[in-house]
Length: 99
Image (cartoon, rainbow, N blue to C red):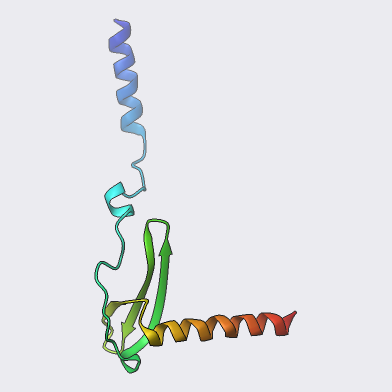
């Protein structure tokens, strides 16, 4: 048997036996969740907030509304900035109290 044909047969059999990769395509990995953001969302509409930060995307805030809809909120909104400052200072105080 020809060496090239044998090598090709081995490569094909190895390729067929390998499990498919669980990795996402590059186009999906680099895609950010929030493409557009809402600038005027009252706090009373929000049930919960989720924060996402990844190397490929800027800081993203996803709000789950009381009607179970999810929207991306602009992280520069004044009430959200104040909320984050209060949460950070609360965490610092609780760490200092436990130490």
